[in-house]
Amino acid sequence: MDAMKKIIITDAVDQKAVTVLEKAGFEVAYRPGIKKNDLETVIALYHGLIVRGDTKATPELISKMASMEVIGRAGAGVDNIDIPAATRKGIIVMNTPGGNTISTAEHTFTLMLSLCRNIAQADASIKAGKWDRKSFKGTEVYGKTLGIFGLGKIGREVAIRAKAFGMHVIGYDPVLSDEMSIKLGIELADINTIFERSDIITVHVPLDENTRNLLREETFELCKDGVKIINCARGGIVNEDDLVEALNSGKVSGAALDVFAVEPPEFSHPLFSHPKVITTPHLGASTEEAQEKVAIQIAEQIVELFKTREVKGAVNAAALSAFADKEFSPYVQLAVAVGGLLAQFTNQKAKELKVTLSGELLATSDGLILTAALKGFLSNLVHDPINLINAAIMAKEYGLSHQESISSIKTDYANLVTVEIDTGKAKHSISGTVFSASDFRIVQIDKFKLEIKPEGNMLFYTNIDKPGMLAAVGKLLSEANVNIAGLSLGRLGEGLEALTIISVDSRIDKVTLKKIASIDGVKNVITAAI
Image (cartoon, rainbow, N blue to C red; front, side, top):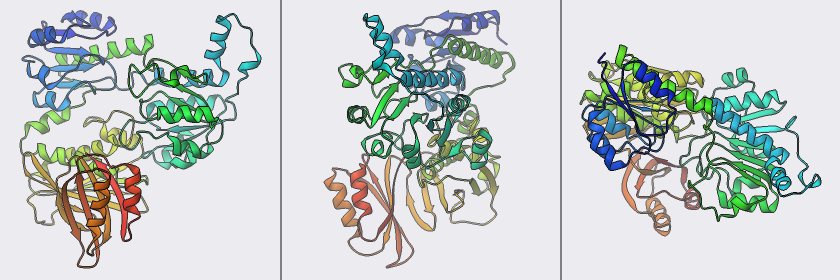
């Protein structure tokens, strides 16, 4: 190890990280709040960078990292780090997944209890000089049904605490197996059942096109009167305008929010003055223990990297070798894209994911293509951070069976990747290949042969192969001001079933999707984004 490795810390990471690094013989610059221009000027001098969420490791900044070997995020999310740019530069990106699990779970439960017992409102009242016991009658959590959206690490910790309080826990998770839920003592349910049966609903899912506005006017209508809502996951999962309306109508009796669609939020929004709402400024991970834990953890990971070259907590370590191979790298990217598409193809839970490879180049995969497909698949479904390091482990933890095999059957392509999911009720498969380093294509979906580049927003539907079908869909897209960017068609034969894929420049709203699905002869309407 070079004892003079230089590390710069540019966010307010707990200073115990400095202690760990200096004790190991590193030179540490603790510069939280450093200006962007100043950082760009000095970054070439450093071998390691530690950040939280404020510093943005953009491609521009990364391009100036002449000596950088590792970027460490003291926390789970790495949204502020451009991982592809770092990977291309040969820089390892590390995070500390799980460091804030307990803190966020406890914060969720704290908000739940505060909400049920009107703690914040009663505190404000008594500080205003009032002794008003009648206005703040609460409810017990004992015997209530808690509905949890997302049963990753945080969701499971919330469930453990809820069961200790005598609550009945039901949960929705698009990946968790029935066997695993039984072990956890959680009753799995579908989305509508969560809304219909829960006395309290808490969300622990990622924010994506499937979960944005998950709790909105239509879903509030499915709920019990007086349901309580908690969000310590991501702003945007709960539609804030619709929540205010539901609070005003009494459909929702209270809400506790730690995250918001825009942060800092617009405080003139009626949500922030509503008497039935408790808010905190994104404090889920803000405990001394969590911040100290992630600071020490990321520092120790960096020390191990430089001392022993052992890589822990990296989100791109496996990708470094994969991306170094210019021929193999596009197939890794293709597998991630195909896995991500398959995750959006069904509302049913997948029991198994299989990867079949054909071609001389792919015979050297040794599980990497499978891992890439799992990364794409799970990243679209679970809240936990998924990368090429932990994808297979996380799949096992969720009870998702997976395997990779090499086929000797010759195809029309030199190398072909096929990913299949099995829900127990249906199977879906997507096959793809690479034409050049930056041009990979999907060439078959289920039984339909076609050709399309997996990128951007796409509309999929099956239809009877007859004149006028495409025109009818195109008319609805035009009326919704959605521009068509590309088109691919696969059909089984003239007059038989066809699969149409339309690439569009923007998301298609749910009203338009319902109209498309109502066209006579159109079925299986799905939107997906890569």
